[in-house]
Length: 126
Image (cartoon, rainbow, N blue to C red):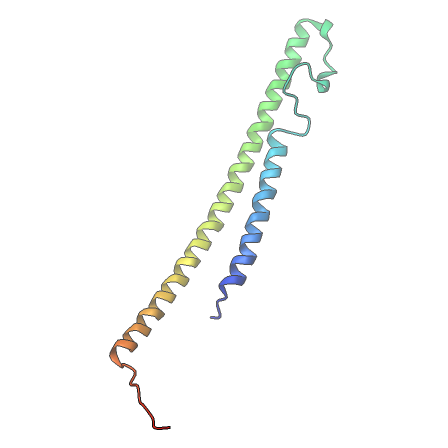
């Protein structure tokens, strides 16, 4: 097996970096949302009128519950992404361990050959 470490690291590192950044952006968009409003009153609550009294509290409660449901769904999605990335990472670690074991076995074999049959230096008269 022709194993080129530089190509392996260059390709998979870039792929992992791209996947990680993409997952972080998607997670941020799904959890925080594009209409994030840290201070009240927010412009996206314009459909709720201040004069409706008790109905206003009910609508606000409904909106809060919908936000919690949306965040819970996003957290479940993020958990699945974490499981998939963890599984891929475990596979890469197992592959790395296998390649390391092969390299160590080849090194041990080379050292045993070097110890058993030392190289004789022959001087020539030139």
